[in-house]
Length: 353
Length: 282
Image 1 (cartoon, rainbow over the protein chains, first blue to last red):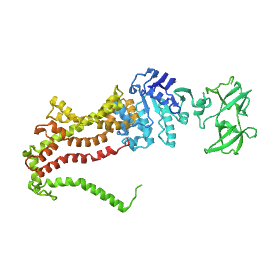
Image 2 (image 1 turned 90 degrees about the vertical axis):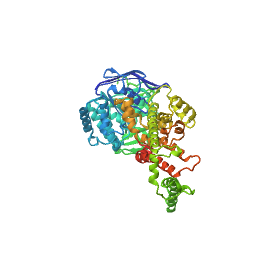
Image 3 (image 1 turned 120 degrees about the horizontal axis):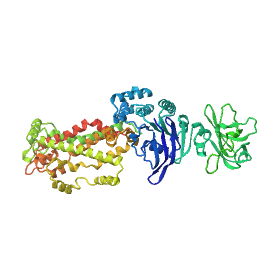
Image 4 (image 1 turned 45 degrees about the vertical axis):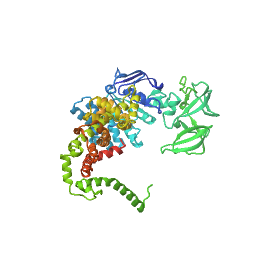
């Protein structure tokens, strides 16, 4: 168990394609970090550089205060779980777990004990004699995790480990990974494109976009204070509503409609306003902004109402108890608004707030 | 969508049966011919029912050979063919699996050049380069030796490509997982790639064994003493006699004996062989 320090790391592929640009990140001992972003954002490349499967173009990666740029993957004392499990198809589950230990010259009795313990923890003891082909997807994923656990590594690296599972299994495995990581206390780096996985698993989320870090923070911090319009639209489902707006004298207007007034600390001018779906509320007094309902998605516990204000598409999350009409009046609390600069998309801090 | 009509089924079966007969009839004739005495062929008609000389024919060919055509006892020729076929099959598999491994898993200078060099040899089978190859083998003093018989036939572009295609279907993550598990290149090859290639190796072995066994032109060029004759050459020598009629009964005896080892190999490895040809899921 050890901290991982990533300092100004870049990856430039042959042909000058920059997959990762100048990423710095300090991962504390025992921390669960989730790298999240759309495909092609460099998250897998970053993970593979930590693992040693990809060379580092510039910058340094240190695991437990040892710089590992030139260290072989096997010698970095990390364990990796792959998306397609990467189990050795011709070996039994036991041999899959034991292979890495044998290569390290761990004594036979020790291997037996470690495999048995990992198998018990992951409830795969009955399958130790089977081949991976004879297991279901979820069981294979457990075996892949077992292979990581028996190594007692300094860090776990997960490369989209749940993407090949069906939705229900994904949720239950997600919970197991989290509990297991808590119990073992091993520093973990987890790559996913699924923001829900990121939110539920992470101690801290790292949002990557175009090979750069957009934001690092605890899940709720990232959710409530997205650093840019990209993070705002990526984290959270449904995505945050973003609309061009204008602030003048403390009131925020989308087109002709004043959404909220009494906003302090934001200079007058054009900007992008962000509204979480759950922060748009029906205005029972009937004086709010007119919201033209287009269509509704029923989720059971809530319904997502898609519609428009002044031609801008907005989504709001309502309780199923709220009566609907073709046009409803809505309002947003001033302190629930997010403001982003036009152009750069960076979050605008509210002065004095 | 397959139409199922009784008469279509019957037609399909008829075609298949005719096909089997066309293939099997010559084999039947050979087996029958090997059971007759030498005089049963004088009439110019080939007998189609078994004769009574079977044991005598096989015994004399295995022990004495046919001295009038310069054919030694078959045992020695069968042995030569076996050695040659096995050496070629194993040699080809070892060389091609190693070169395919190098081409797929290693980044070395002139990798593409190496790949194309192997590819080009596909266009140069033994028959095309037989004269220069003979010259090289003769200059190396390898005439009339097992080395001369086998080494020039060992390099195989086809097998290299087969393994290359197979290795490309093995997910990269498997190699990466092995690297993290502390397996170096040779260990990965031995512990993971080789066991996964098992069925491919078996299928290739069958094909290459038969290829080696049936070699005719090259052994004829390279051997001059009867101690290195192969069985296929023996058949040719016996059927190609001057100033006399070929003794078809013993020629066919030799043919039947020459067919047996490939049949044994195919039957013995059938299960793996079929698996190797059809298996796609890894």
